[in-house]
Image (cartoon, rainbow, N blue to C red; front, side, top):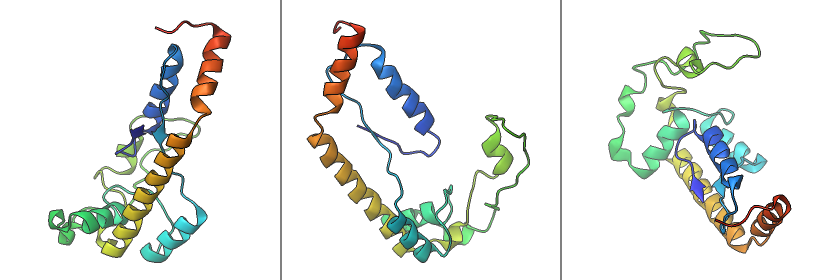
Length: 160
């Protein structure tokens, strides 16, 4: 199982996982990629005072650290730079790798000053419980490897 620790990685992880189909393998690869549910989003909005959005050192991520390792935080520094999206680049229907810097030149998105320990506890415990559920589902999974075998049998790739 792959667990992502950085928001910018899912596309690369998805690509990597697809490359695992290049040859027959006697194992399956899983990516823990929790989807938010309506109850989670409602509680998150209730605790944070705003709709669930991604941030980078904003209220949600800062709350997680406040819950897990409060001694690492300097909340009085949260207003030293803006975490507002700057919208400095817009080209319709086009992706460019400088998109993050164009929007967030301070590499900070959100408002860390709005962090609370309660929000951090909620987010952290939700993620842990969702991960436990995913592990149980993977342990019980009998379909993925069966389908992989069927796939390789159909394309006639010998095991290496």
